[in-house]
Image (cartoon, rainbow, N blue to C red; front, side, top):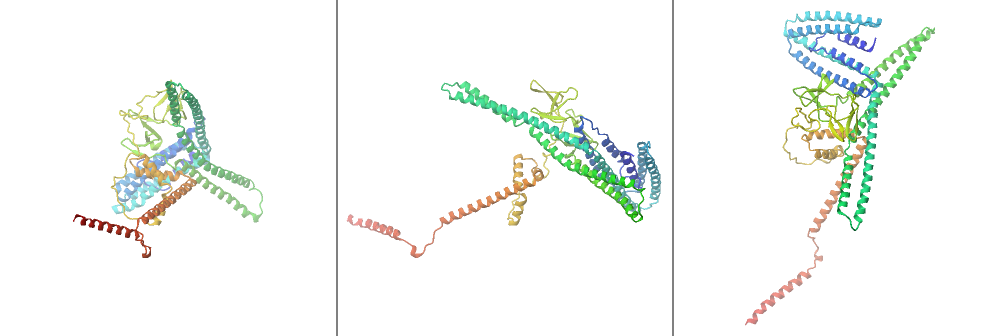
Length: 603
């Protein structure tokens, strides 16, 4: 029995285990089968290695999104039915359940046939028998429902049955999740090749463009050096022409501008992408190594079990018979333990694709669910993420093709057209494409170019996720009082090494939603820095704090000394020297007596 038939058999067996009522009108089984078929049908041919990882990630994240949406609806419906439902509605839902199972059983028989092995025939007959029993139980279920003559009995029945239905629905999703994880473990080598192909292509592209950039800058520096020498020679001449000097200075300015422009090349974004895939490859290597070790352990145990089975016909002494039987049981237990470990490792592989989800924040409008990509374009997600569409300037849906290999050069991001083999430049998969003619960009695709610059006539609405203010305006609050030293130390130890950089970034950006940006920056700095970098920042913060404390101490000491110097110094009586005051007083008395004596001369 192949893997897909095993999935069909176990899934159908799970849904026919106990009678239950379908909460929703939609049956999730066909959609789950579609996910499994899509995973099995992903091509892994030469030239498509780079898309293999992305297609698996799309399917895995779409399944997560579908799981979340369906369970959200089912939880709401189960809560409603558990508290306010009528008997007629329960009977109607039971009839719909019977109809859904009839369709599901017909699909199972169509997909499971033909029967190629006795094991498949046995499994098929088992499901047919279970289906027959299940439908009989549902008919008895309806018969028992009709005997509920009071609403109180209906409420008791609903509170008992609908949580059970919700659990069965979630069990079906969990089973499919485990099977997808198990299926991914078979593709682990292909996934590794896909990630390595992406990383190596980007790394080679980084190296190539870096070499071109270095060569270009070196040539400009050489030309600048020669022009500088020419400028110096002209400047030292006694009879120098101002026109020649101006031309040389103009040439030097142009070369300097080119050197500055070379810093704006797209190598930085390419390096970020390369670093991202390098980290992704490193994470995957850990999962790959773990799964390979488990596979080697399983092969070793299977070889030992095979040797054990080949020796069953050997005569064994009676005292060792019990030991021999225990050995066979130990092999089964060991293989079961390895299977559980392999499933856990496979779940880690599943998480590798979905731990960050689809890496997007979703919004909703009157059209549907959409996200903003890295270039600010509005991309609508349909079929729970399996299809992504972009709205062009005429308001039409255009499917986003994101499977072409892309590269960077000095002019920007480009891809190679499969038909014409032309080099076409494109800022993102959903934007206009250009080709170079006579060193000028010429549009290859025709639209208004809204993705390159703002166009008022464009009908596409693009939303900036940081443009809205989440919190209402709050008047400033004058906080009085002081924090105790322990609280100040806690704040400093917790935020002193990270908050200054974050506040600086927010002040530079001045976003409309500063609280959201501040929180985002805090998390970004926290998880992007290594432990060594964090410790270094803490040491810098401690040094800065010590410097602030020392500066304040010195300033306070200088202020105290200046104040002290201005104060009147109290002296002891034996230290008082009033000779100067007495001399000045005697001079003043003599002067007054002289002025009074002048009156005698008038007589």
